[in-house]
Image (cartoon, rainbow, N blue to C red; front, side, top):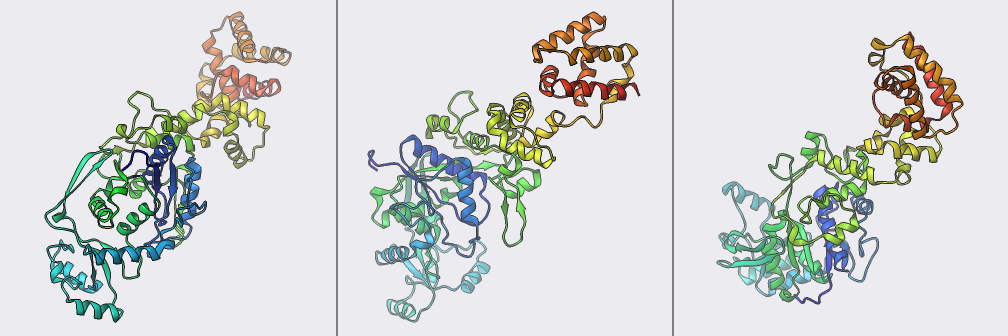
Length: 506
């Protein structure tokens, strides 16, 4: 492969349902590599398996990528000079190459029916169509040329299978794993063209990667066993010099590290594994996604970026631009990466802290609307800045900040009443007129005044600060008390002290 070759990578999902976070990470690593090398990032929809096609899935994939900021340079919706970008629209090309492989002796017609193959599986529990039994099965290698021609002319259904050579070793250098070798005696004769004329993944992926001039293939480790088939096809079709560089990404593992993370694990353990909500059009069942659970796109992408990769430092927080700048294939791990939902939540918490109140405003307004609260945007932004360090999800805003918008409905009286006294009541009654006439309503001045008043009363700060917080908030939580006082404003603070005094004295 020429070092001058333009970097062109592709993300090639099947439109069969929700987009697993492992799929999004594959898209992300492709995107990072393309952007880092001023290359092209292509979305190709692999919809050749029409039995598994799900309406709406392609649009869902587009929306997931858009949410994550992984915009393709070429795609079915955007177009490009290497289209079409749906495999089902490229159908005529595949048969041509399948026939070329048969003519060259690299593939053959197989006339075995599904029932016949099922019978073989019953006779041989570990049945595989391969060099070991191909001459005992019904195909153009075991039949005479005349018999084969008659079957073809009669319209008998057939598949085209690759003829995997015996006693050879297929080797290639993986960008992540180094040299990888496969014994061809252990590789079965995969179907390349199905009876309906549609290609299988194996043929389509090679033909399309060649047609689209793909330079590097980043895909999941689960495709590693298919690599020898694909490498043989590149060679057999005469395209060995154009073959892309390979990188098989480590699996994303269950939290306990035992096996690949699945949707069932998410259902069982109570966390999403899809990027966004996916509603099955047949059953109507909705599987929750990271976006709808309240994850910020930046946090989700950051979390995926460091699942199986690091930059060699202690840094964990990366924007998409920083990932593009620092990404390197040699820092991708060979071993699987355990998914940790608590860590995922930590990323979201950190990204909320990093975000401006203005950027979070649309989501927060939705939360407030849900609670029938309408507030001025500037005020919401100031409240956000005060409490965002306490949020794991934007949806936590109401639990952490409702008291900024509505008076407490109840108070933590158990924390106040056992030590409440007439002296404390008098202190707060006396502070009301001072607050009503206070000219510099800002947290530092308010704090200094309040603490001076406590000192003058002869009581201790701890005896009065907690009751004051509970008067304003209802409980022992929230940001700095005087930040709360400043934001609530004079009238509201006075009203809350008066209301709480009635409750505390009852």
